[in-house]
Image (cartoon, rainbow, N blue to C red; front, side, top):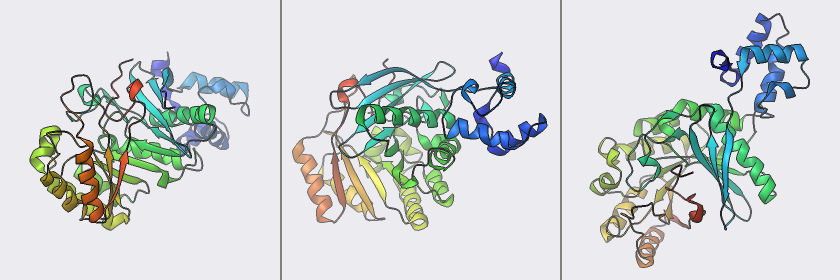
Length: 346
């Protein structure tokens, strides 16, 4: 029966109002239901207490609320939480809560699997099955906010689109989800606390800038030499660094917001002086900061973290060139919740 019903959260507020008018009801009932769905994140019609029982039954007869369920939760010894999130069709994605002393960050997924082919990432080994809907992205944030309050006594403060999938390959749904997350009629979070991380799809970075988005941009770079980057991120052949650079320059010209480059240093891959020099040169095109990320091995161990001496060489050269650099220690490694490890092992 529910297969023939429309997911009510796919409707805009105006469409909900129109539905009520078509059923002989006042339009403001649509506003009430919209508030239950998005501001209060309700997953069933029965609890919409300011609506009559007959109206609730009418909603039940016409619609379904397709919502996620946290199927399995793991806690790391460092406080990180990983959720295996079951979608309404039985598919599973993972999301992560990363706590620090003063804030908590949600790492959310945007696709089931991934359509890109980064060789160092466990998610890339899963074929892309489908894009997540806006409400499925939104629900991950709601679930993590609850866990943040329960386990860390604070509301969720930041969101990063660094979970499973390439967010810019699910552009419309990601933007709709962010709109709901930031709207006063949704979760009311500030856009500046949200970062969308991409492997680098130039035309979509330009589109984001042209669409005047208010969130932050991070780019998984890992090498500023085309040949090296293509060897670890084969899609770089389609979207080479020159095009990526042009897109990032366009982004900064439009938004005036600096870009974050995510960068892992591997032994024998990007650990030479010329790799460091290339990164410094790439960084000079627009104001930016570099996050040097600790590598988290996936099962076969083809990639190995570079030595601390090499990392120090990167830091020194970047700082000498007045480029902001942070070293990001991985969280949740013991539960496969760290960067690049999300692979639905559960």
